[in-house]
Image 1 (tube, rainbow over the protein chains, first blue to last red):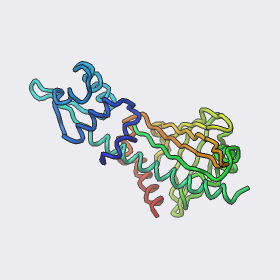
Image 2: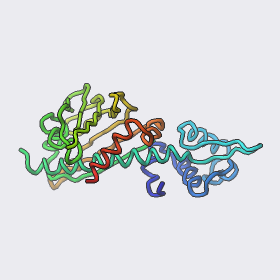
Image 3: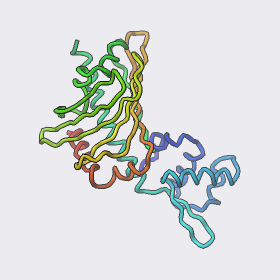
Length: 107
Length: 144
């Protein structure tokens, strides 16, 4: 998934900290919670809360490895989201092209 | 979970554009991709209530989408829900579409289309088989 597709994809999440978490996970792959603490100048429990929201949304998954919790972006969800945006963008772009022409010709 | 926003500057005043995004006769002239025709539809965004559209391509493949018109604010905006039906006519998860108009001083109108999908299940499903294969075909057609 391209980094520049992220803003539209995650706009529904509407939070810059969650955006920063996902961006870092996309960039670096699977990370432990400790490696996410500095994505924003907020407390560790606050980061945890954001991770919980992201996990509930299905966008981020958690793997437990001994005492560590490891986080990563769910690639299936990402691919699905990218596909959804792509399909619907094409549908609407073409429809709006037709609307422009209809406005010009129809009375 | 996924969101799409498109802006277009249209060469018509706001009242005329609103007619085209709400009235059944006008909607039918532009709804759907190039190369599709609409054999069966109830497209009326002048009032709240159910709507549906069946689009058909040259090969006879059908794509059905339906929803409820949730808000109409003439001459500013229309909003409706949106869900594709699969080959078994089963309706997928809903997303939300809003068409908003802003009149410009030069007599043109800016249309903003916003389409928001809130559920990850549907996003994941759209990458899988079933009705997503219909969308794949829709995409292929749109690319021609």
